[in-house]
Image (cartoon, rainbow, N blue to C red; front, side, top):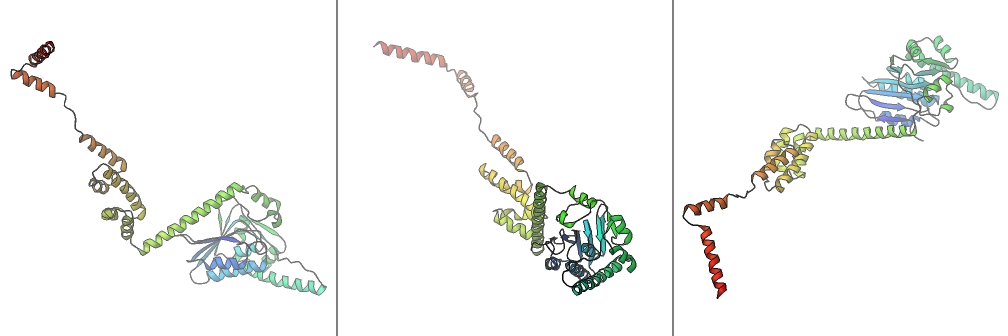
Length: 358
């Protein structure tokens, strides 16, 4: 049987969330799955988000009792939130919250329990007696949690009574109203047998397959990010950041710069950025044949772009330039010493011509 809800573990400063987005029992929610999710909750705050057309009364009563038992374990608080509709036995689960929130465009529906019976007249009478007992149990919950009289509960349960969020606030089913939200339904609307006006709220906002896929992807990514963050937080609690930085610097071959990273960075995220840049700086300085310059740039937290510029400038300053004034200086020196290069050259030509004539 597929699970009936999603579970989000408690994050820093936020309560754990159990989200019920299906029918209760039958093809949807199973009480054992809900118990497993409830047992996984840590901390003292729990939010139960409900969007359900109702279902199996015994599964719903079981879930109601599980929530109340959890809340009674000393100093714990449960908030139930109607995210679309809480109908039939889902309204009882809604009442399990110490604080009960409903968006202004949400609905609730209450009625007496129903059953299918077959057999003899005695069988029918037995079924009716059983339904009366179940109805009595449900009335007691409405009276206790909503603060209404037994007569008011009986009148309300005598038929399918649909209630707006404002009506729920007035009669005690809800304790707080919130701004209207876009309602979505993950259950079969046709099978839920909701009134036309209520179905319209859901049909108008039914997500496309693409929207569902995108939302599921986003939820998966968020869950993965939360898991990683939790692991890092646990790791940080076990090992000081300075020790983590030292271990990471050693892994990257930057152990000589550990003190710089540890003093400059308060988190591993900062250190990872500094160490990534440092590796590039070390490589650039080695390529420019000035490896000793790397430490200076790393300590100054220079960007790789600034280091490239500095290395290029140093290379340019070290270039040897050709001095084209050498010849002129030599000629001037020869002239001042009384040596005439032209006469020497002419004498050389005459000697060659004399040799040719022999």
